[in-house]
Length: 177
Image 1 (cartoon, rainbow, N blue to C red):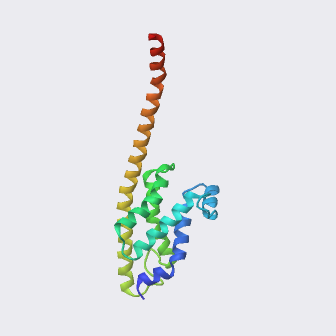
Image 2 (cartoon, rainbow, N blue to C red):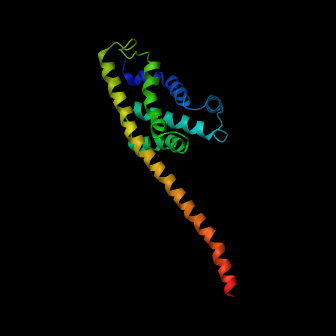
Image 3 (cartoon, rainbow, N blue to C red):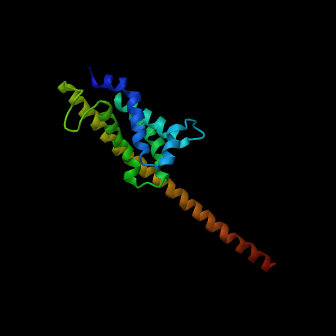
C-alpha cells in the first residue's frame, strides 16, 4: 500500500486531529466554540481554518499546485495574522500536520509501528518534506498579510490626521470671511 492511499483513507481523522491541535492555541472557551459551531457566518474563523486545512491536506497528499496551496494558506494565515499570535505561533499550524499524520498512522518518533515496509518510510519523509515546504510558503503569505495590515493602518492614520486638520481649515476660512 502506498502512503497516499493510506493518507486518503485516514484523511477525515487526520483533518479532525489537525484541527484539534490547531485549536489548542486558543483559550478553552474559544476552542470549544470554534470546534462545535459549524455555520460559516456564525463562526468564520473556524470555517476558514477548517476549509483551509482541508484544501492544504489535499494538495500536500496529491502533489501540491502552488497557486492552490497559497490560496489555502492565505485563508488560514489571513485570520491568524490579525489575531494575538507571534509569527511563530501563527504559522505553527503547518507543522502540526506532521504530528496529526504521525498520530493517525500510529507512528512513534523512534520509528514505525504500523508502517513496516521501508518504502513507506521514504514516502513519509517525502511527505514531511512537502510540509516543510509549506512552512516556507506560509512565511511568505504571513509577511504579505502583515504588510497589508500595516498598509491599512497607515492609511487609516493618514485619514484620521487629514480629518483632524479639516476643522482647523474650516475655522480659518470662516475667520477670513
